[in-house]
Length: 334
Image (cartoon, rainbow, N blue to C red; front, top):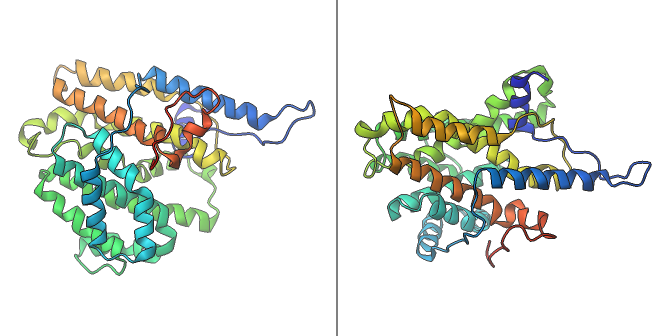
């Protein structure tokens, strides 16, 4: 298979799984493929140096503040229930992925990630409003759905904490994220055939992954003034985007394809090839070397992002490795 096409298909579809039926010899093919997934995930985590000994730290103050924020939006009982379901993953990711940043920035990050969970999980329930939300944001017009109205204000208020470059990237990233979710809806409605487009799957993955938003949340102006730092972190943005997207695909694959009995396409490239290129780009570029403080920030973010998948029931990875207890058990409210 063409390497670019294979990479493109991986970033959206994942790894092909066989049926859970047995073959003529009585071998359970689904079990064999599940073992393959476990091996790939384990190899990936070990190759990038993920520290499994780190336990989730609960920031109860941040959780209360984020919950009170969403309560203030008067979303209604059904929407508030959805908020509660993704409150802990959002807060824990903000704490562990952005540990060294100011508390208020981490609160904003948790709110941002929770909005992204809501858009991802609930899009079908307000797809009509979602389709026009980008225009409404651009024209500063009213959103009918309270989640989108709250998101609009939240995105605009980030200008108080981020410089014009980072803020504009996050605005663009959120519009991409929403439009990507709309396109996913249209794909389902139209029975679109991915084989008709060579690079479209990877292009769509960069939209629905939200990677640029997560990356640029790392650089609040109070800590990394844009005038001084923007050309320090810009050169490695694409490496980070690809790594986030591939990591997301690897660690959410079991949840999205195995448990839901869906089928993807063949895995032809190892995401572990991307991470070394990040450290190389970060540390060796003579024109724009990434400062030690930024490199430490990125490494901490990587650990926190992976913990989002390994420490929360949403992704079922502890269950996947239950026999060998490879991952620590969930906390009570994971």
